[in-house]
Image (cartoon, rainbow, N blue to C red; front, side, top):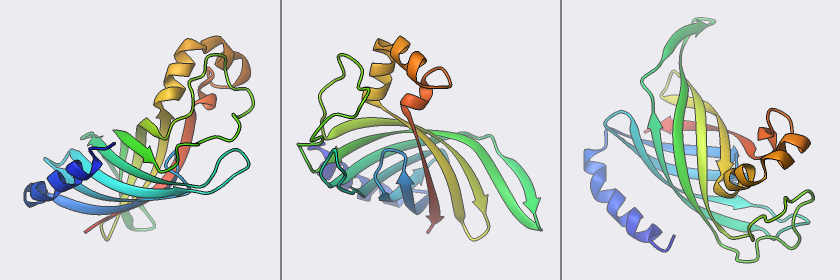
Length: 187
């Protein structure tokens, strides 16, 4: 994440080629209690974002600021419908990966209960894999539901599949998937 400032500097010259720009706010989904993104979309499907968020203090970790760089790929699949004469476009899925950098090297004071054997040490740098389903409403506003998995969650799931199968529902996926909600405004 030391390259985050370089990425931000490189993003601005690309803005002349961007088809659209967005401001986005997401809550939860491994990006903190609140995370704000500035995004630019290229070729209608590829979106690059930079963001900042906040994780409040809890009994297991200190509060932490988060910084992120995200790439999102939006599929062409769309469905159109009306709710009380309001046109809505549903884009059932888009995929993204996000590099997260936290500003706290002492992430956990104690590890959570039921931490699987050989779980990697806590760090403030993570890769996040996400899938979103989006609802586009008038006035260039998108509402979305986000399902996210941290890199360490995926690795731990693969290495300790039986643990997750025994302790969580839906093939153990509820032990690694986190849900977030957000909205995006096209500028």
